Image (cartoon, rainbow, N blue to C red; front, side, top):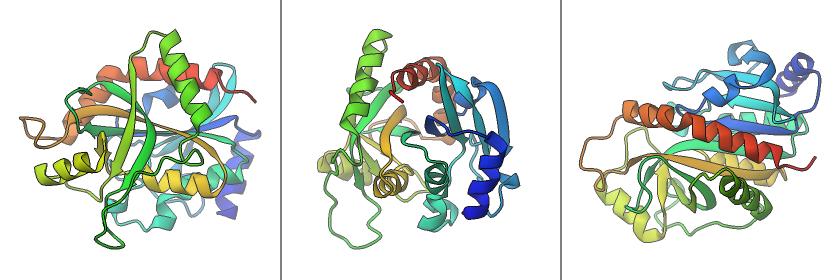
Length: 261
C-alpha cells in the first residue's frame, strides 16, 4: 500500500476533499470532473484489477462543485475471488491520502414494492448476510461511525433542494456472484432490509475502522428475485443505472458541494 499511496500522491499532487467509490453503471460521475487526471488501476503498484462489466478500473481525480475529488471507477468484490484485504484496498488508499469524507455508491436490488427501480436510497444501516462466519442471523448495524448521521442529513437536504426524490433504508450484503434466490430475498426482507447487493459493506467497515466519515448510497436498479416477475440480468442493472445517471450525478455533486472542509 505504501507504494500505491506514494504513486497516486505523486500523480495528483494535492489532498482530496472527498473520495467517491462508484458502483455498476455509475462511473459517469468520474467523467464530469474538471481538470481531470486519470490513473488506470494497472499503473498503480500492487493494485488489483476489476473484472466486472460497468467498472472501468481507474481513478479519476479533479474538481466538481468547487471541491477536490478522487473517484474510484470500479471496485473489487468477494465473489471475484478477492480476500477481504484486497476488497478494501481503495479505502486504505484513500486513508493514506488523508481523505476525511467518503461516499460509497452501488447498484442494488429493491426488497420492497415501495422502492421501485430508479429509487435512490441513502443507507442508514447495513447487514452482513453472507453467513461466512456462522449461521446466526445478522442484526442491523446503524451506528453513526458506519453511517454518518450528519452526512445523511446533507444527503436528504440536498435532495430536497434539488427536488430529487430519495429514500433511506438498510442494505443487505450477500456473497454473489449469482443473484439472490426468492427465498434469500424474503429472508433479508424479514430481517429488516430494504435493499440487497454484493458489495459496499466491507468498504463501510474498513472506513469506520479508519475513522473516515462515510455516506453510502444505493441506486435501486431492479426488484429482487421473487418480487420481480422477470429474470434478473446484469444488463438490466446497467440499463437502469444509465437512465438515472444524470439525476445521480446532480445529487452527488450537490452533496459534495455541501461538505464543509
